[in-house]
Length: 245
Ligand SMILES: Nc1ncnc2c1ncn2[C@@H]1O[C@H](COP(=O)(O)OP(=O)(O)OP(=O)(O)O)[C@@H](O)[C@H]1O
Ligand SMILES: [Mg+2]
Image (cartoon, rainbow, N blue to C red; front, top):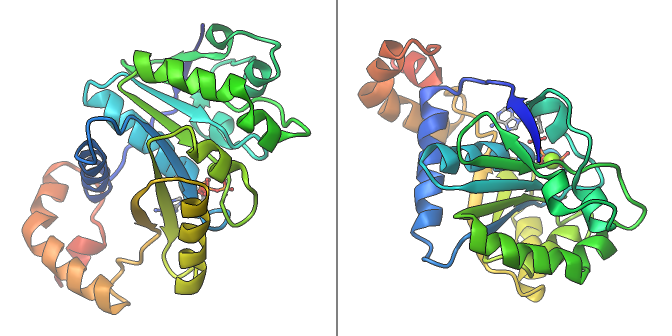
């Protein structure tokens, strides 16, 4: 097993609360909702960030959790979150060069394990559609409380639809204002056709600065009731706090 230290990043109060809510919603999706695929419609909507924070949030809550970076085409996990040397990734396992134990990483957060993507293979969809992948997921289901799988966007490549077949549910990350309603519906249809169970949508990169109607409304609401807690915690004064002025 490999080991690495997570680059620590302190989240603000509201973001932490949002992850707790997401975690709780998943926990209440059913006893058998353990293997979760995170995807989006387009690139850059925040899948990897949300996969990482969600997985870490489960681990901190005492659940044995593994995060698999199955975006074999463009992995950012390694550079964003890791300190220390990790030699082998998921591709090494999928092509049969290494055992799962050899590509697995223990992190310095208790209960939190990770597998990085590894080198980009010429045939990512094939590797993710192979029996070696689905068998592994079946084994991990027995060993871990939660398995979170980060994937490429559904609107770009087929990988997430393939991965979703081995999972209990899919969370779709949509970046606020980036995707049309029609396109989002198409993505949902594509996942339905693949036989995926869409658990829900995370609206990411939402503007809470007070410029938009919703920004104003929620900014005021949360600012009034929770603004003081943020300040007590020593976190930055957020849009919620400033919207009260
Ligand atoms: N809520 C947010 N607010 C501000 N920036 C964000 C937020 N979520 C993600 N980002 C930023 O957006 C960029 C893309 O995020 P991330 O890599 O998580 O997206 P992705 O959907 O995994 O992208 P890709 O499709 O390239 O894999 C990163 O720079 C990240 O820091
Ligand atoms: Mg990503």
